[in-house]
Image 1 (tube, rainbow, N blue to C red):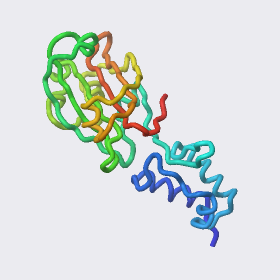
Image 2 (tube, helix red, strand yellow; image 1 turned 120 degrees about the horizontal axis):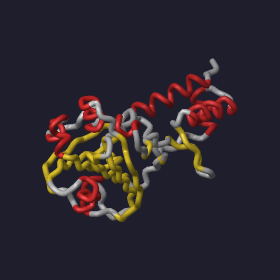
Image 3 (cartoon, rainbow, N blue to C red; image 1 turned 60 degrees about the vertical axis):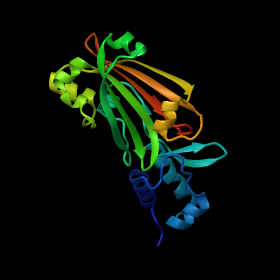
Image 4 (cartoon, helix red, strand yellow; image 1 turned 90 degrees about the vertical axis):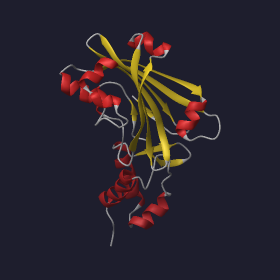
Length: 225
């Protein structure tokens, strides 16, 4: 009995959502997919085109079709609502009151802030290591920022909901660097690599209430928007 394009797409979509297929995995060749799903080559191409349009797959010229990383390095409302995709989990490491580092103090102001440290993982693979430095005034409205656990979905979203004050990202910068010892420890790396680093500044009105830094695992394809 012949298969269907929808059936093939649904099967692959489910495996990606569950994390059985992870970003960077290469799809089998067309012939193998034809045999697996009992489809013509044209039907396989249409199924792959559908999943590409949905952001599940991406082609690399001369190499094949791969599972895409659908996380976006984004600012604004989407990032404030959360950054994980299906199959990914946030592991909150710590929340500590610390003096603001110099580059953070330049945005947040001198003095104490809350340093929140976490990783985003798919299984045992660390996709991202991030830190936030949050203004202490936020803790009066979102006391959870002082607790060693994740806010649901993010501290920015909770603050916005409880205070009624919109939170936006006033700027976003992206750069690359060679891993620091802290990067290697957080990303579970044994050697030095070049990593992508994104810094974001969160504001409500004209007041900066937080600064974030995300370090992304080397060799992990990312879509930037």
